[in-house]
Length: 321
Ligand code: SAM
Ligand code: SF4
Image 1: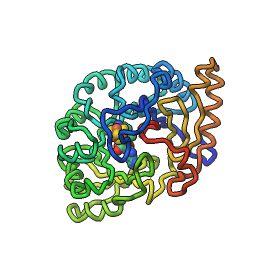
Image 2: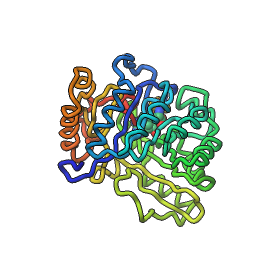
Image 3: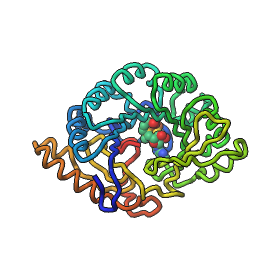
Image 4: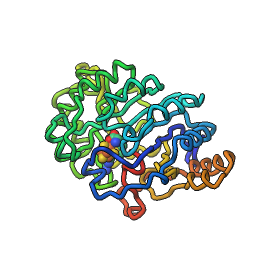
């Protein structure tokens, strides 16, 4: 469906847990309070909501968290979502730690795409950023994802700690047909606006090595990343600049938090309590109407950078990145 500003909303990001096996310092420090199990939507509840959302035009879903793979049965959820005819794409965002074991079943269940957080290639730095000494073998993991037929992307948050690796991380797109993306810090969790670098800085740095880096002409206008290609890359690099280049004009997404709140925009405290409606026996039609209103009233732009909603803002692990 289209919202009040004529944007076509066809993408739902679903956080299935607020828990994580890592504690990236910018996202989920150790003192983040965790939710009770009963507060989190059951898979059956998520599937019911996605069916209703699909009747309003949602065709793509992304499963995220927290770390989605710490929740048991993530592949079962993929299988259930696969049974919804309107859903054409099911993607997963993960830190990759549990992915090697989970991959075959996820692929069998019908997963189409994966985004993997990759902030560093160095095990000791990984431990310093995440608090856990469990860095995956990135190259093997990415190769396996590609070989399994998944559209594969990586996400690197721009941090002072990984600045010296930006070039080496981008060079993964020289080895593999993947999209290597860099994300400006957002003021969620402990993140601070553009604190440790912005997309323009990354582009300048990468152009020193790949001087022919050019914007991809056939970009999906609703994608938050601007992609660049070079003759020397078999993949591409992407820059996600919510702070320096607002991509709100073409935003096509809404979010379902792990507690069943429909959030039309990541940056605002506003949400609609779908869990409350589900658990008090409301009909599909009633739920659809609430979703329709929420989507229709999606705000025009994000409000990061203002202090308008900071008090109500939640951490990224709860909303779903
Ligand atoms: N655990 C999974 C993962 O790490 O990919 C999925 C959830 S995580 C919240 C999704 C993405 O959000 C990750 O790529 C993470 O780096 C990013 N993220 C978390 N906090 C952020 C912040 N303050 N600014 C920008 N990106 C952030
Ligand atoms: Fe966990 Fe992902 Fe947040 Fe890191 S970014 S703490 S892996 S949810």
